[in-house]
Image 1 (cartoon, helix red, strand yellow):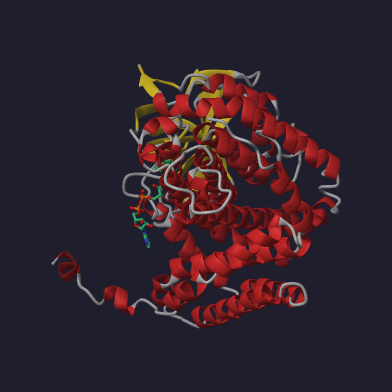
Image 2 (cartoon, rainbow, N blue to C red; image 1 turned 135 degrees about the vertical axis):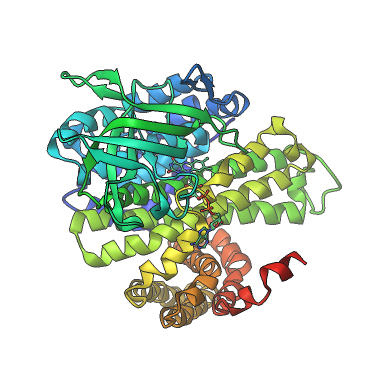
Length: 571
Ligand SMILES: Cc1cc2nc3c(=O)[nH]c(=O)nc-3n(C[C@H](O)[C@H](O)[C@H](O)COP(=O)(O)OP(=O)(O)OC[C@H]3O[C@@H](n4cnc5c(N)ncnc54)[C@H](O)[C@@H]3O)c2cc1C
């Protein structure tokens, strides 16, 4: 399906809103000059538009399938994947020591957004590899890094993450996969994992699984979990894929969407694995991959939202229906106020979500470059907000895109429905958005809310600066930030975690609404008198006010959620 990369938005956000110059100003990322960044984004745009976007529909119509134990991917996926690998895009932010480009996550995020917009189900393959690369860079032994990283970074091999089991979904600590020490530096891994994205395929020569398992005698729960690297083919002495390992695909799931991505049930039977990180330190090591994937999945939502918006806009400027309600209208449905409302909402939310995602990526890069605890805390705080707002935006915007199409949205051939079906899972995988919200009000507030308050200080300083330029917008943003501050104080003072959890999702959504307003206000300041300011006005006057209801809900606690018994719910 046609897709045009939003290069102007990326440049504007990087230069004027999220402060990418701070990242490029560090020694670590000195190579990310404006010229280099522009060249990278332009090249990724070309790949996304010309090579990946044409694969979106075939992937939906011809899902990956299992044939005699081998997974066959959708038509064109092998060529599309090869183009991604040969362009060096898998290793865009990987360490140059092993062949990566060493570029900031911020640029990788913009690249990943374009690739997700063009073909979500294929983009999930390199996204999984990127997370695994980061986990191995931080936690694998020198020998494993030397053997695996060059292959993963070049894209010759791909990576997966294996957490989920039938009884262990959100509750990862309930897993039962076992690992036994072979006494020769390897472990025998046995158990079943479900829903493994790109668990097997025919687009690269080896698949490297990061598998969570429990060693004999290890404690129950997440404390007792270790992490193992289990390749599909065990590398031989020359490092080439050798004998087949004890891992096989039992079946592929039939899914609502994302058909081009093989989602596999994997069986491990005395499969040879290598320990990553410390024994029983598996969750810490896996969290490196999960945080990478959480940033990436939020961005997947934004990519799909952008593509769905473009699709709806194109339809709205062609479809003629009803008498034009404006003078000198086009005669198409874009003349109608309600269609305008939908299109502006879509555009304003995509811009807000993109600004939040890039702010999160900037914080990750600054933390990596400076090792400053404040940047680390900012990155940790923004990760669940980006994951959930990016994916919620993907869902709401693609839903609105379908609505703009009217009945044709419900007919598969327009492609509007595919965006809705494909993006739906992003709010579920990589920790459901409910689990993200609990992380935000739980672990991310162990500091009593300090990291959040520092962010609000910045929002309010920006609002003060804006008072001379657009006082009404500035006041609205300042008020919203104050309400967010009061709500955060209230939540952080609750010792009963279930009181926090009862309001976690509305709090997370309210938080994102306020952050989105900050993104738009900065855009309005940098783009005074331009459509950037007009869009900011739309967001701040029409979409931001939602924060008040959301944050009021967040302060309701959990009592009323239990007021009806399970029987009364069913009555
Ligand atoms: C297409 C697809 C691809 C996937 N890819 C992978 C992959 O590559 N690797 C992998 O390991 N997994 C993968 N998953 C699994 C995914 O991460 C899980 O589905 C997800 O974590 C939720 O687990 P669950 O499905 O068991 O739901 P459950 O944990 O059963 O959750 C059901 C509902 O209860 C809520 N809930 C559960 N526990 C709590 C709690 N403590 N507090 C509040 N609410 C709670 C959830 O938010 C959810 O709404 C994939 C899933 C899908 C559908």
